[in-house]
Length: 466
Image: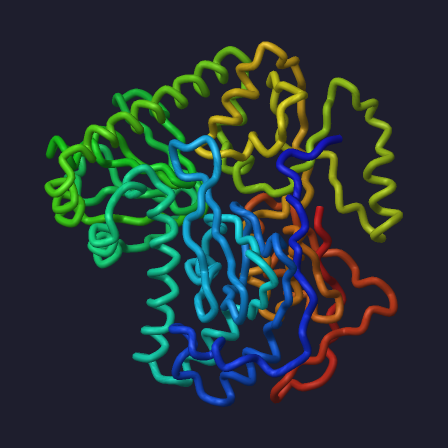
């Protein structure tokens, strides 16, 4: 067995400080205006952490349910901008400044956050912030959240080819106009023949471009985080040449045509630069499709989204597996019920075993194309068994009504037995059918239910990650 993607390096969380939070934290723009109760709730649920020089708070591509305020020292946000070979500083965060605002959207981290010198940061859980800000009034809460969302959008735009060299005034114009849209798996963003109205950016997830010749559907491209599309029709004024469909839950940013054309008018060279980037994207897509045809990786491209979002995807090499069943047996011995079921999707492919797993998840899919097309690639028949993939944005965690499901700093999804009521919402929410309900282990205390039905609930089942 092997893992594709891995869970990533563990965060350098730093030492937790047990002391009152400094006033500079609550004077940060998004927190200004909170009442005493809101401040107290945030202090109790959050954490004040001391970080040594060079400590990493989080890495690019990781998920997160908190944003941060610098209480002392500084944080450098380093990202690989589209078209660059290495990382560069996106921005420096001084005391009183915020970072990690992507958690408000929510979307994966855009940059690596690293302490510059001895630093103290306040970690603020988003759900607690929203509850505290709501008591400040709807208008105030909207202002607080809008401040964080705008900062997150600015960081995103600074890393994409469209905006990387634009001056601040033009970035602000786009920020005024941009709109966020969420699409579920299989949902249509626009259809072939529609009039163009926006330029689209992929903030998170994956988008499939496809055309229909009347007899069959042709997949033209897969677009991942940081890619843009729909610009060609805005430039020509012609109808959409393809349909755009979400390959899985995706977060997209739409820039209306008037704002896009206004920026292009001030920067005539922008269109030629975008065309060069688009040609590079197209070349990468041709390499992927060519490798798919050569190596019979049809399954990978029918469900490429799955490989993109999985942080820890278990695979079984069927060429060497003797079908002894010891893997499932050992899992059952450890957990009381097997969390690994040797059923699932199978794919026949050629993969370069020496390839860096991190490249397989690099955007936009270029690492995967290189691994498939490599001369060192060897034939493999792989089984993707039913087991937890520790998704970047776990649907099971979002739908859990009691907060029993969590995720540690390394991205591993786990369950708090004492909080689980056995409602089964997580099993219904998992898009991969990788959760089953299992008998509650003997001696596990049932959770108490507040309100009129107060008292222990006879939860006889609880989820088991397959």
